Each structure stands twice: as C-alpha cells, then as structure tokens.
Length: 341
Ligand code: 13P
Image (cartoon, rainbow, N blue to C red; front, side):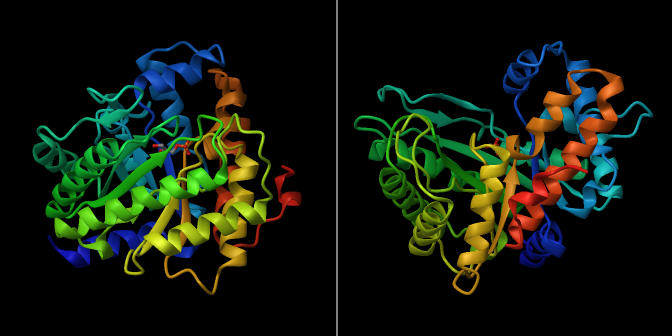
C-alpha cells in the first residue's frame, strides 16, 4: 500500500469543492429506471445513457470522480473512446463498483448481505489497468421490527472491511458504503441509533484489519426518518442529527465523507448537505461532500427519455444538479438556485 497515492487520489476527487457522481447502477436497477421512462432496457441504451453523462460539457467543474459499473468501464463512446478515458481526459477520476450486489442473509429474514469478495484481488488489478483509482462497495442495512440484527451488521461490516483492505493493497481508494435504507416507517431517532451502531462497528473492524483511515472515503446515509414515516423534520433538524451521529462515530482522520442520496428528492438532498456544511462548518473534521446517483441523475434521465433530440437539455439538467450539489458542499446553496435559466 502506498499511502501517498491514496491521499493524492482523495485530494484530487474533492478539489475545488467537487464531489462524486455515482453512475454505477447495476443493470437491473438501471433497467428499472429506464422502464419507468419507457426507455428500452438494452445494453446499447445503457451505453448511450452513460455516454450522455460522461460527455456532458462542464461536468468536470463540479465532479472530481465518477463511479462506473463493470459494464460501463468496458464500454466505448460512439467514436471508440473508452468511457473511463473520456473521464480521465476531463480531469474526472474513474472509479469502479466492485460489489456483486446483495442477496438474502441466510437465516435472517428480510436482511441482506453483499457479495463479491471472490476473485476481488484479481478484479482490482484488472480495473486498475483500465484507469480506476477508487472503488465502491455498498452494504445494505434495513430497519424494521427487530432488525437490523447484530449478525447482519457484523456480516456486512466484515465484507466491507475485507474489500477495503484489498483496495488499499492495490493503491485503490475504497469508498466504504454502509447504507441504512430509508424504506420503512421508522423515526429519525431510530435511524440515528442504527447508523451510529453500524458506523461504530464498522470503524472498529476497519481498525482491527489495519485499514488506513486516511486512505478511505466513507459513503453514509443521512440521518433521516423512513419514507413511510409521518414524522416531518426540518432541514436543520436532519443536519443536526446527521452531524451529531457522524461526530460520535467517524474518526477525525478519515479525510472525506460523501453522502448517498438514498431516494431523497434532489432538492432535499442538496438542502440537507448544505445545512450540514453551513451549520456545522467549524465542527466537522472531514470534507463533507456528495456521492449522489439519483439526486444528480434523475431529472436528466427523465428528460432524456432515450431520445437523441433530448440529449442537450438532459445534459443541461445534469450539469445543473451537479453544480448545485457542489454549492451545497460549500454551504452556499439556496433554493432560488433551483431555477434553471
Ligand atoms: P443514490 O444517491 O441514488 O442513493 O445512490 C448512491 C449510490 O451509489 C448507492 O450505492
């Protein structure tokens, strides 16, 4: 492990207020979002869509790193350029999702475990050759009656840890993503408690396995009530709960936290990120940024609808959302900026 390489990658990804664009949806997830827009669920349409994203003019003003899927990192643009090269030339570091998605955790109903450790060392070496300098692994924790169980948290944290050690061995920065889902009717307080337990367990394991905290990025959920909850919390209350939870659980030596958006609307995700940075700027030891997928992409995908004639407008929307996310990272966002002129 070359610690300096890891640090340099992180510095470059988050330079000048930039953040990460997650565009690594698995084929089934991407297809589901295509289907909702009447877009054919084919490899060629996924290629066209990812090409639209990586060729968006000015994307590099707000995006320092983009997470690709295995399919996308092997695909080329119409003129034969690998997608990863196009990003690299624009100054956007390509990253790669290396987990192989989730499956049921045997013996624990309604809980999931993420797969993908087999052969990971070899896959990382291969991805590095095609330009990937960071990676992502997503663990999924569900809140419900009597879940998450300790067993589920431990199993997922173990997998995240083994993944992180293999990434760092290869000089690839691990994005460590323990996502506590917004699905359900739980309160913000319950989300706080589960997030805190998961993060504390995670960092204890990472420490035990000698993961270099300075050479990783944490990708957590914000602390928020479940989607089906009747509880309504103000933007400032969510920012407060999230900042408190992270301050209680994340070592100060971790250089950067990049939130997932988790199904929040793009505007809400920006409002929350902005309030965390604005209200707590003197207390947070880390860069607090974004690694959004839906909160950056959704308006763009809805506008594209699979038609070439919509590409230009769809790219404008993508550029706009990426820009607003950066402004929120700096704590200078306001809702008037939502107007697209
Ligand atoms: P969302 O921002 O849509 O939650 O996706 C982030 C992500 O990469 C999930 O792994």
